[in-house]
Image (tube, rainbow, N blue to C red; front, side, top):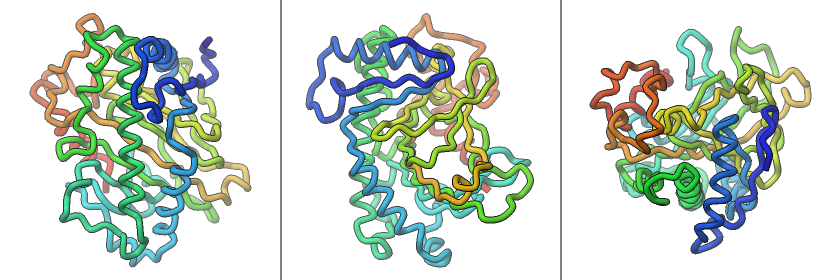
Length: 331
């Protein structure tokens, strides 16, 4: 597949999809190379035929959409616990840039760390089936993420095909920050605050992100030339992007690309509710960031995280790094 710098590639993941109990090495290598090419050029790729059905995505959107229709008082009973990264965030709660208004959205966050935590208060009384539906979907996302990481290990010629997957083997366990975020961007019926948008320009801070968009659209991706292109929704696809840790561990070979969602000018888009589901993939939290080498010849001292110096990163674990992000972005 040829890569157009002004187009996000589409890769057919059918032969490596999670609907197969096993996958062939030749298929993994071939598909992994296509994904790797896209990640090197633009940092994003559409995957189709992943094994995650559109009906499963609809089910999560429907059940979390039911939650979002509740009153503010009801929703705030499940306000996000910042230590567990679990619960509801109201409008403009997340602030990606400290001197800018919070993003025009609300969300429900589910850290994989809490899946087995019996002390967590799920909104099942308010919305029956909330926990079973979302956790089941997270398990599918974990399976897909590990298949993608396996295919990338082949393409990057790492020591073995499980190398990257092994660094992420604790997804949905207590020592991993991978999480599901169900998002609602309400209609824009009035004037926003100055500089307020649906989602400010940013890069993601984990390894990969799996994004399930609705058909409203609005996500924009920044190219190498500094131009923005639309990540047009493609039915039954999953949009995958590289995040900062994977960029750092591959010495910049795989790109963590800035992206944003502006306040649309088109009246139809402004008046539409936008929904998306993001699954943020993280390595095991006890891994030391600076000392975790993916492959010696991919080391690049010019690639940093959070503009931290090598000395700052020394001794910092994945868990400490993620907590630094949370401290900066949640008001």
